[in-house]
Image (tube, rainbow, N blue to C red; front, side, top):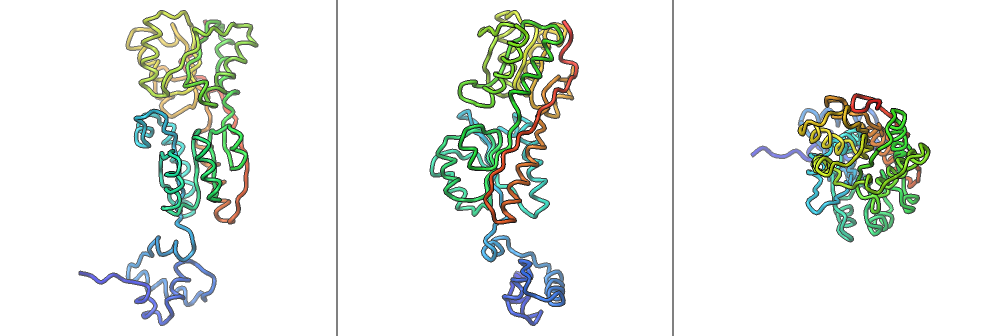
Length: 343
């Protein structure tokens, strides 16, 4: 068995103390450049890779950022969220891109049980936390008590004021979606979203739709407001119900692209033409929205930009050893493709 190289061996070969080697590994400014070069050359010759755990013991940092995703349905896991909605992968990808440039890594979780979440953070020595979506208030109390850099994304509750927060102007986005359809001459416009009562995000998107309808002097019929799971399958099942019940609509504002794509697929499979028989506007502008035929008209909420902002906010606090609060709102934009047409 090959003997594992350790700091003591490197110190012996370099003719310095183990403390000096530790300073070089952790880039502490207590060693001359000449000594640093000698120690680093020996480390390279021996193919020595410093242990992250050892470095964290020395400088108090693990270089790990915890990212928590919302588990809503009982069957949800972080894995299923990544599989069923590209939004999460795009968001996480940008976060990882930013923090990796600082030499940090992501630890992904969906924990939301009181007590266990705090223990998860502490046991892994996380340097910071990014939370996406809404959780029980107890979760935020636990995080606040830990005093580590924290960024909330897509959270509108008042306790968001205690942390960094990054949000999309959801109401404005759905307003633009409905306004687009009204401008095309549609009057029978439905709204499809997640739980309006339980989710501030879905509620804000519904309110934006409602604002446009009222401005257009169009009635908001409760029979034209629908809730479904925010998944592709949720969209398919909704569309099947819509066609079975023969609901009299010419257009839909759908508050998530993944649901809109499910609706389009089910309609097309049943011979219902998009947009000739039904115009659809989604929300998110995930990459798949431009891959369909026709392409999905949608509201771009700049997912990657939100991930970039969240990552930069948390790295700023970690590197400066501060605990600041900054609220940033990302404007949305209407992207017109082929799923809508003039009536």
